[in-house]
Amino acid sequence: MKNNLDLKHKMKITEILEKDRPTFSFEFFPPKTEEGLASLYKTIAELEKINPSFISITYGAMGSTRKKTLELIEKIKKSLKCEIMAHLTCIGATAEEISSIVLKLKKLNISNILALRGDIPDDYPEKDKVKKDFMYASDLVRFIRNLNDFCIGVAGYPECHRDCTDINTDISYLAEKIEAGAEFVITQLFFHNEYYNSFVEKIRGKGIKNPVIPGILPITGYHQISKIQKMCGCSIHNNIKTELEKFKDDPVSIRNFGVDYATEQCSELLEQGAPGIHFYTFNKSEATRKIWENLSKK
Ligand code: FAD
Image 1 (cartoon, rainbow, N blue to C red):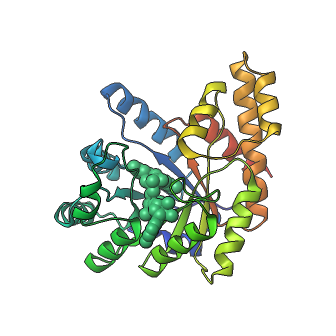
Image 2 (image 1 turned 135 degrees about the vertical axis):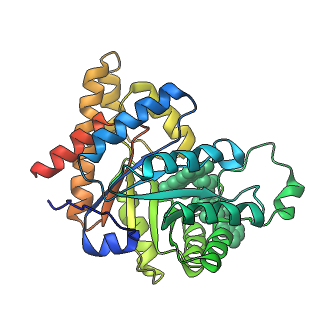
């Protein structure tokens, strides 16, 4: 399996997707503490040995960790060989604020942005929804496209976004993001490939040809799963639930199961033509590294 990029120059993810499929990318979030930051540096150093196609750094919606995203990118940019994709959310932001962040990203030599709306907090005032400059991710995509020559990715939801009642409608909004200038899609995590397959089929049916990178989360704990399900609204079928119940009090077996399950999931996705895998690492390296090693042996 080929995954041996040594990128010293700015490269767009669309170019990487053309030249070096399958891509392997890792998502990290900016830690809140110095201890968390030190641990993240170790994780990144471990995963860099795999030669990732790119890594991505999340961005807190509504101001929670905004500054930290740019600071983290600035800190790791110099020492990393691979490309960094910056996530950017627009909910609650003004055009001026977004312009300034995009300019900073450009100065940091970042060429790839994942353009997102961000979750709307329950207490977000109704009036602010109309007062602000951005309602949806498509507004942000259009805005960035007009500012600079970034390579723009967007989020896709194989099991439908939770604010939307119907997958076909949700996909029509995804089509709007592509029309606005987005070039690739990274999906919300899912544990059952049939959701990704049917999502891609529906997207292709709409004439969208852009790469759709599946987002995969290795299961690492019994309690992790219910939290994730609540947060992302993804389905967990009985085949997973039964195994988790079986190993409820045995964290090592749960982690092993998680690695084996994700290996099979990724292997099938790649065999069926997925352009790469985007790993939700939760700032940990062990499971992702093992899955990558398993896939390399196949
Ligand atoms: P949108 O595409 O704007 O969609 C949001 C909702 O509005 C959907 O229900 C959609 O159907 C609907 N909609 C879209 N356009 C229209 C329209 N024109 N009219 C009516 N309805 C419409 N969150 C963070 O805070 N920080 C991150 O770093 C982050 N990274 C992520 C990475 C990935 C790969 C994914 C999948 C999600 C990420 N998220 C992140 C979560 C994301 O911000 C939330 O899921 C958010 O609620 C929706 O963002 P979006 O960009 O998909 O929004």
